[in-house]
Length: 321
Image (cartoon, rainbow, N blue to C red; front, side, top):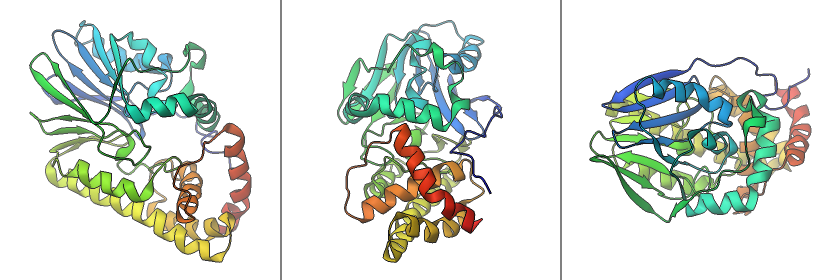
């Protein structure tokens, strides 16, 4: 059996949903593709995450323009990954905001990530020729940045390492709305290739402590109500614990291939129905393997390293499916 590399066989567009979750606040979700948060004020608009290309950003912009012709004032990057950042130029915003960790990662490995993600998931990079280059923040913060959209307070927070070392969430206290970026996903397999798995669970607890009543995850449906939000945090925490611990158990059998052989079927049994499971799980197991071996800093993924990993675990995938 031949296993298509990452998401190269995924050609089906997902339905875009643009729903009001509070007055003048909208969640753009697409059945497991990267989500976008939109905050519309009379004086300007804030957009959190921008999709992978300016062309792919256009459907969201069209939805916004049905509601408001206010200028795009701020773009916020939840982290450095290309699928979140490279559509930013479509908004021609007055400022692009990111954490210090995100800025440093763009500087260190932004181009490698661009090349890597484009080859992994070409559907999300339609209109790739519309990308003018890497997206560079114009406002960089350390831990917290407070901004007002008219009289609405918006807090932009870095609460610890997790999905990446620069993870940023957006918190709107008035409505207890949390946009999690990929620090929390909902029934869409979290990608852990650049993660700090142990620290991620601690950061997740810090995010959860704000007790959101509305949660817009990085991927997956927007969730309304504290109980639904709490359940999503439970599922996310359990996934992170499982990826690390099950992979760690597999390391006793040998190298990465043996750890993958052990972890893959156990994780698939529990999470195989989540969106992009087959895409993400080899990279996540690889990172969990490294972290369990004491490699604290995630290694840079390149297009070449991606394919080497896929070839290495491909035979394991065949044996366990």
